[in-house]
Image 1 (cartoon, rainbow, N blue to C red):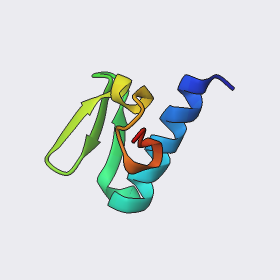
Image 2 (image 1 turned 90 degrees about the vertical axis):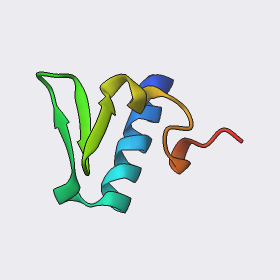
Image 3 (image 1 turned 120 degrees about the horizontal axis):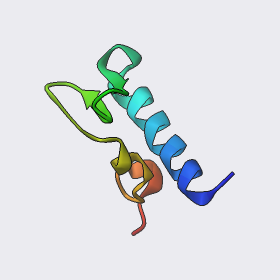
Image 4 (image 1 turned 180 degrees about the vertical axis):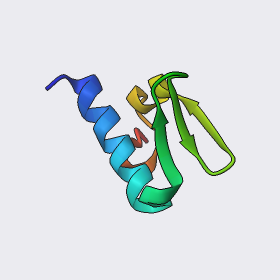
Length: 57
């Protein structure tokens, strides 16, 4: 598994566990991670520090 994939999975796992399965989704057509009233680009899942699960401090 690549480091990028591991970071993405850790971030997604954190989002699901802390925001809830019913409140987090992936919109593949728009390449968006959706939660609450907003969201972010799917690429953000690959970013270290996007969630506390991959905090780099």
